[in-house]
Length: 90
Image (tube, rainbow, N blue to C red; front, side):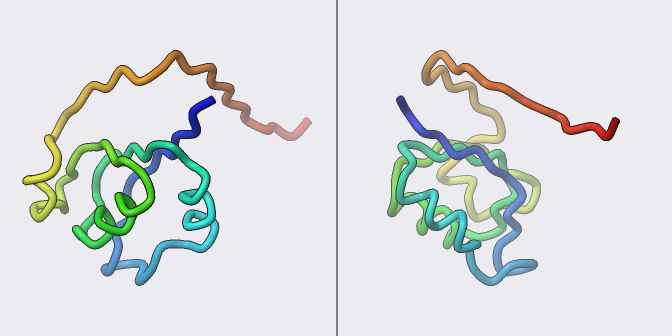
């Protein structure tokens, strides 16, 4: 089974100074990262790609990442079974 981390809106260096420890731990165990934009720093991309391949797009705050990504991208990776649950109070 392939483990994929999907994330966006990290806004590194403006809001956060480093990646959360829980994310760094997960990066050690994943096979692919998909990022949906608003990295704000090429340093985030460089750090993540040191772990595994990174696919994604650039967002409106990512002028420095335009050489690496497009504004839109379609990836057919695998067949995914995904469950989403919303906990509601009774």
